[in-house]
Picture 1: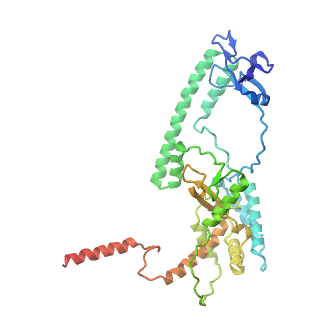
Picture 2 (picture 1 turned 90 degrees about the vertical axis):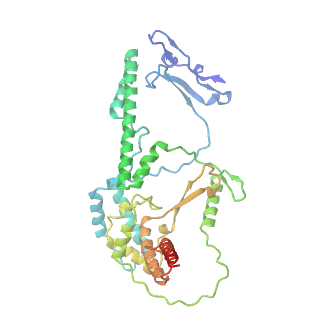
Picture 3 (picture 1 turned 90 degrees about the horizontal axis):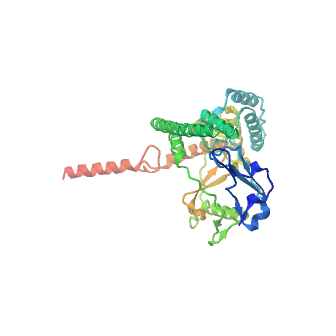
Length: 399
C-alpha cells in the first residue's frame, strides 16, 4: 500500500488535513492509500480547506485517472412535463392542423409522418422537459442559506461561529425533514380519501424505494451465463419470441367459407370515444409522444388517419414496433422468466385498436349464449352460484 498524500508537491495549506480548535497547530493525519498497481493512475492528492464537509477535518480529494474501455451509453431520455401544457400549445396545434391538407390517395405512412412532425415541433417549442429532482427534496432554502453562511465562516477560521452555524444547520435540517414527511403523509391520506391510487402509491413508495443494481449477466437457454451485450440482446429476443409465439392447436380442421359482413368506416364519434377510453400519465411508445400531447389534435385529422389505415389495411411502420421493458419480480434477475415484460406501443395506434376491439366485442357478444356469465361485461359467475345456492335452500325448505 502507498500513501498518496506524500507524492505530490503542494502548497502547505493543501497538505494539512486537520487544524486544532485554537488554530495554532496543523497536522496531516488523514491519508488516502492505494495499491502499488494503481500508483500511476493517481494524478493529484490535495485538500480543499474551503469545502463545507461538516467536520473539523479538511476535505481530502484524490484525482485518479483509470484507463478503461469506453462504454457507449445512449443519450439520456428526456420526458416532457405534460402537467404544464398551456393554451399556447393547443392553439398552435389547431392552427397548424387546419392548414394540413390530406389528399385522397395519400398513404397512411405519409399522413402519420406529417402529424408526428407537427406534434414534435410544437411540443419542443411550447412544452418544457421535466427537470431532474434534487436528491434531498426536504431541505428548504433557509437551511441552504445557513449552510452557505457556515461555509463562509469556515473560510474566515472562526471556530466558534462555525460551531454555532453547524448547530443551527443540524436543527433546521431536522425540522425540514420532519415537516416534509408530515406533508407527504398528509398528501397520501388525502389521495386515499379521493381514491387516487396512483398518487397514493407514489407517496408511499418514496420512503421505501431501494436501489437495485442492474444485472450484467443473463442465463441462456441451456443455463450458461451471457456477459456480452450482443448475447444478452439475442437471448431477450429469443425469449420474447417464444413468449408471444402462437400455441399449437393440434390438427387443423377444414376451413369453411364464412359469411362476412362489410364493416362500416371509422367515424369521428368512434375516435372521440376511443380517446376518452385512454388513460393519461402512461409511458409512450417508440414515437415518444405522450397521450396528453395528442388530445389537442383535431378529431377530423385522427379520423382521416384511421380511415386510411382501415381502408388500405396498411399500418405505419412505427406503429408496428414495440418496446419491451423487463421488470424484475424477484432478486435473482439472471433468469428471463423472473421478469415481467411490459410492452409500450404508440398511443395514437391505441385509438384504432380500441375501435377494432369494440367492434369485435360486439360481434362476439351476439354469438354467446345467454347462460354464459363468465368473462362477460356486466355479468359474473357469482350471480349463478348465488342463484344455485338460493334454489338449493328453497328445495330444502319444501322437503
